[in-house]
Image (cartoon, rainbow, N blue to C red; front, top):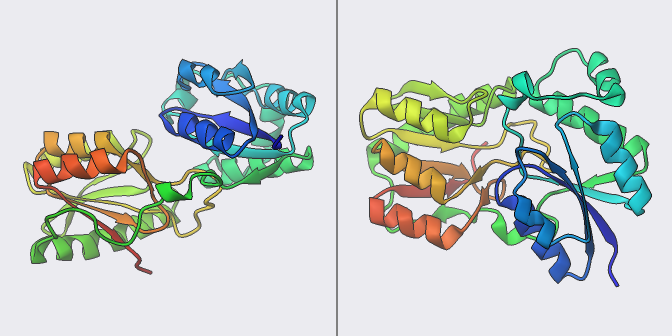
Length: 270
C-alpha cells in the first residue's frame, strides 16, 4: 500500500484531479476541504476528509497529524474576495498573520508552508502526480498569432512579469500596446471580462507565473472556462507560460479555442 498524502483542497476541479491521480499511484488521500470553496464530490475520492472554514489552520494541522500524514499538497485556490468576508482565523492563524509585514499571496502562502513544515508536514508541488497538466511549449491551436498579436504578447508579457513581481496578480489584458486590465482580487475570468469590454474586441490575454513563484502552490491555471470567457468578449489570443501553467481539460479547451478562432500559445520567456 502507498503512503498517506495530505491534500489541502481549494476550489475548482484540480483537487479532484489530484486525488484521482494520487489514488491511481496507490496512495491514500487525506483531505482538508474548505466550506463554500471545495467541490463536495471530493468526498468520493479520498480516504478521509475534514471540512473547515478558511483560516482554521490549527484544525488543519491537527487533522493531518492525527491521520499520520507527512507529505502535503495544496491544490485549487481560495477566492480572494472571501478573505474580506468569510475568513475565520483560529489562534494559530492569527498568530501567524500577526507576524507578517504584508498579506501578499506569496508571503502568506510561504508562511503557511513554513508553519506546516515546523509541524512535520512537508509541502510538495501540486503537480506531483499529474505533471502532464503543465502546458507544453509552442502554438497549441490551429491558428497561430498574427504579427500584431505577437507584438501584444511581447508587450503584455513584460507587464505581467512586473505585476507578478509586485505580487498583484498573474494576468493582464492588452490591446494596441495599452494595458486595459490587470488582475487583482477578482480573478482571471473577471479580469478578462473587464478588459475585453473596454477593448471592445481583439484583446490579447497574457497569464504567466510570478518571477518569484513557488510552484508548490498558486500555479497559474487555464481551462475551457478561460476560453469561454474570452469568446464572450471577443478576445483573440491567449499567451501562457510553458511548463509553469496548468491546463485543465486540455483537449476540450483547445477544441473550444479552435472553434472560436482564438490562438493559444505557450512560451518560455525571461
